[in-house]
Image (cartoon, rainbow, N blue to C red):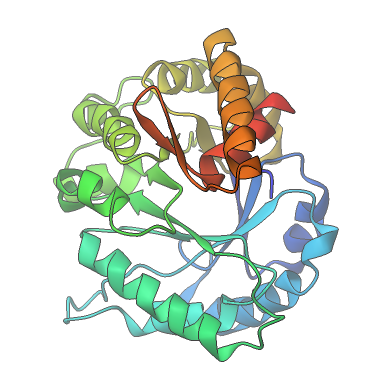
Length: 295
């Protein structure tokens, strides 16, 4: 796994051509989508196609994630949505690197999802699941923003938060203003702060206007200045710009070198996690630091 989060590209899970094309995308993460880009009547077909694609994991150069249905059912009944449970049952297998959970509102949702994944992993043959499946909650509601630190801290599987601006604005009844989404400023600022405090990273939301390259570049620059390490993208042409802007800085490279040096010495001595300048460093941090140095 690359353990980089500069670019997360959403790929409609019901489109065989796009699923095949994703094998060669130069993104850090390709995310097969079971949510917004898939019509309700196509969900079952998409689950089968994504499950088949995961069995071809070695053909994909990027990390492979899946975005599931949202945790809360549209009818606001108690518990996780049945669609999400079916999604998880169809995708938890060896080819899966991580799961993006959209519209997360509370830490309890993630805890319940974590338990379901652990149960599904336990049902697999030992050789079928040989790594921890990561979780990336997407913060897309007012309640999610309020709870984002607790959400980011709710499971050891969590490696990042994603910020979702459009559903958030819809939740708050605010009209989107391109290039200056004033209604989302507080939320966009808070998500990377909460992620960092929880020891994970933050991925900025999408830019919808595929014809406005200058606007996209500026939006990436703003995201980087706020502490995001990457951006969600909806078209392959956006990947190059994202990678240019979210390239690691000099201090980040020096920090990664220190993490690798200290962690390797610690593991050589037969120890596990370590502390560098007051920060807990474990295998996830080490892998990300090593990947960062390989950019």
